[in-house]
Length: 62
Image (cartoon, rainbow, N blue to C red; front, side, top):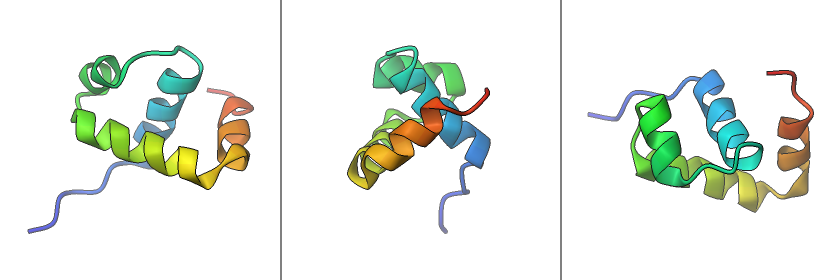
């Protein structure tokens, strides 16, 4: 059975906490009640997507 999807809001929160707050993967996982693996996955995908996604996430009004 596949794992349930993560809400887009939670993905944005992962990136915000990583990029703006500078939290560790473990701290983010605990704050959002998700696994460290999920945090690593989405931070890695954002990094691979390059500057565009990082800049667009930083300009969001949270």
